[in-house]
Image 1 (tube, rainbow, N blue to C red):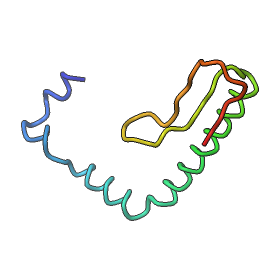
Image 2: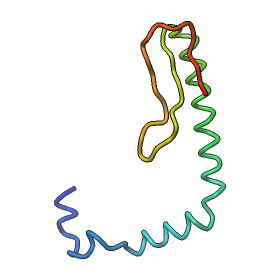
Image 3: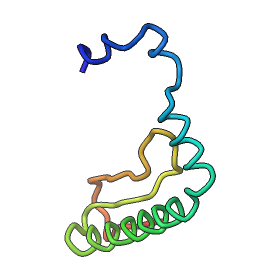
Length: 87
């Protein structure tokens, strides 16, 4: 990858390209339905994960953390507990 990037013009390392502009405009103008669907899917997957942990690993607790970028959105603990929780 470094060999490919090394072939770019020097200003290509800090300047946005034509496709980057097109992608940004598209995301900001018509990307909301995709984002809404993504967030709904992620919410469903978090609930499924919570249910699966509760059913299969009752001694493990799971909790949702406050989202950070680009940080984690979930925490898993192996401390003994009677159930998994999702908030």
